[in-house]
Length: 108
Image (cartoon, rainbow, N blue to C red):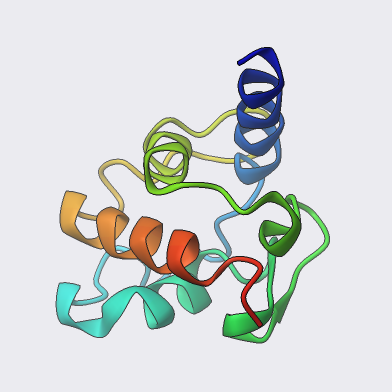
C-alpha cells in the first residue's frame, strides 16, 4: 500500500508539469477519444508507446502502468509540475484519457 501511494505521489508530481499548450485543449470534443486527447494534452510530457509519445518531463506511463483511478485523480488535481486539467477538460474527456492510459500503458 505504501509503495502504491508513493508511486501515486510521483505520478502526480510529474504529471503536474505536463499539459502541453493551453490552446485547443479545452475545446477538444469528447468524441475525439482518449488517444487523441492524450496526444493533444499529455504526449509532450509523458512516454506512452501506444500514442507514439516520448515525453521526458513526466513519468514513463509504460513503466508506471497506472490504473484509471490514479490517472483520473492526477489529471483532475495536478501536482508537482503538472497543472490540473479540471475545468480545462470535461469529466468525460478526463475519463477517456484515464481509460486510454490504463488500457494501453505497458502494452506496446
